[in-house]
Amino acid sequence: MTDLRPAPEVLASFEAATGFMPADEGLALYAAAVGAARATGRPLLEIGTYCGRSAILLADAARATGTVALTVDHHRGSEEQQPGWEYHDSGLVDPEVGRMDTLPSFRRTLFHAGLEEHVVALVGRSPQIAALWSTPLALVFIDGGHTDEHATADYLGWAPHLADGGLLAIHDVFPDPADGGQAPYRVYLRALADGFEELSVTGSLRLLRRRVA
Image 1: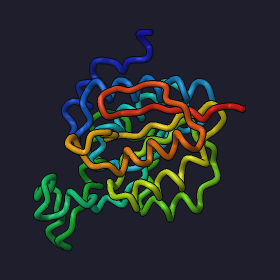
Image 2 (image 1 turned 90 degrees about the vertical axis):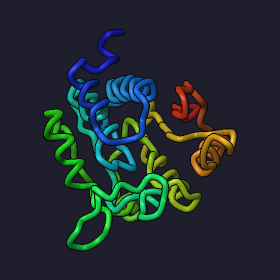
Image 3 (image 1 turned 180 degrees about the vertical axis):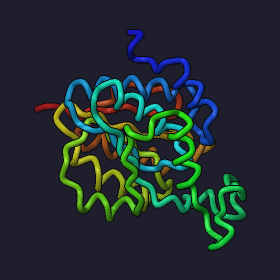
Image 4 (image 1 turned 90 degrees about the horizontal axis):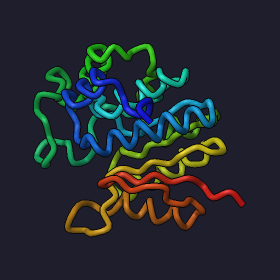
């Protein structure tokens, strides 16, 4: 269906934004978000925002369905984005405090895409926010820290808040250790063991829904 793809200008904003999600995975996430929001009427939530690349697509899906996209991130960068690591970007370091700060870049990304009003940014650590949360969600997109501690905490904290018919999306799932870290893959296996069924695979993106008894 054509309405399960973002408009060309939204896709252009996504492709221009700083981030790591390939276009095919982004399109799959967008279609899932639109479908889940329509089915449940609930908000969309992502854990791990960085500079807002995938948030553009979730924000546009929220705009298209009359809901809102929620983003959860402390904006200090994940483990692999710290100085000396592979994905470190020195341009994202706050010179005054000497630490990563992706929040200004994220806000500029949403501004230039014209999507600021469709996003609520939750700035803080995922487990702390999840512990206070009570609103059912249409989609939970796990793309935060890639250690077992952080990925598991994201799953345990947020998957219980999925509405009936909601979707769980997990990014960077690599069954082969040669392709990438294994923490998201182990979370994916845990979700299957907990009663989720896999709906689709696009690159490293897995989409799941909890089985209904």
